[in-house]
Image 1: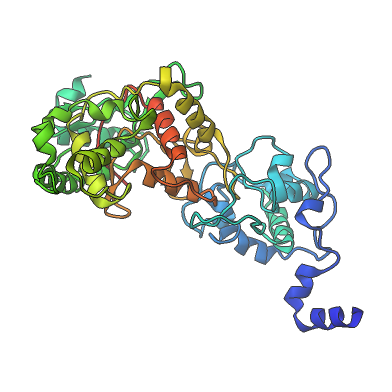
Image 2 (image 1 turned 90 degrees about the vertical axis):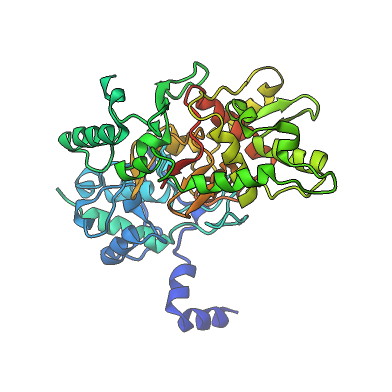
Length: 157
Length: 287
């Protein structure tokens, strides 16, 4: 049994990262009273370059749909629903940013920002075609959350 | 409002100049006035009904569009939605079915529909249900003409809804929300504020809390439906109210409700009531 698991993990690095015992499942994320998350969701350091990609990619984070970010000006049409993220790395700690990216409602009650790392508690969850998806995946993977947090920490005034 | 005395094109130019002068290039929100064909004066901005807690002022979607898109609605020759209206006028006069009846057989000239759009949807006593304009149209087809019902969001239906809307252009929306309509209105209000889908967004998230702001390149309006059916440049056709609702719910990454179903009936009444006081614009031109 143990050997089988070992072989599978050895076979695909990507799968190993997702299924790693160190990955915190969406329902197990430990938010403190202010919405911060102290521990990494994966135990693997965030990749800021990939986090940047996640933020400007429509099918991934699509963060610029609502947030203006000067260093991402190359991606057209930044939105203005959420606050500008300029200087986010100065204003927030890594732990606070992790909590906000994973589920901003734990930090800002009632915020419009969708939770990026949440899989339950939705009203009529579906896909972008309007079809029902009873058990939807989180918008971002645990590692993508870490990557976005790593990128946000690089945005200094 | 001196500006209203000017020719529409002049008004547009004036509004555009004002907007540019204020550094707001693409939008012509303040000061622009919608007068169709130089004669139908629209109310695109007025005080919100007292029962709407979240808004002080109600604003037609027309005000949120670019000057170019706004201009397309100011003259019927530029409004592609009028092609659907023309097509529906043919259908209005077409004798058909085993009863050999056209719409005109019972209703006469389509001008008899003046005012109808302003009170839709409304509670139908006989059916003991909330009926939309589409329901009335299909009821005529199946019960009087004895022909097949049209698809709720199909082209023929939406064109006919546009033809009937045109008869009320310039008249203020005035749906009833009390009496037997009250429970539908309450249900619609609940749906309006329900944060659906994986993105957990309600109608209010975008159209009450965030109107006037951009989501990516989209300029969020108040989601008013006084302009429906709306000719959208995006899909180059007339779009009905429930078809638009469906698109919005879908965009919250949710399982949509069915066009023509009870949820969208209730939601239509509630959203229509948020626009009571704005004038009927159908067919409007939007992005």
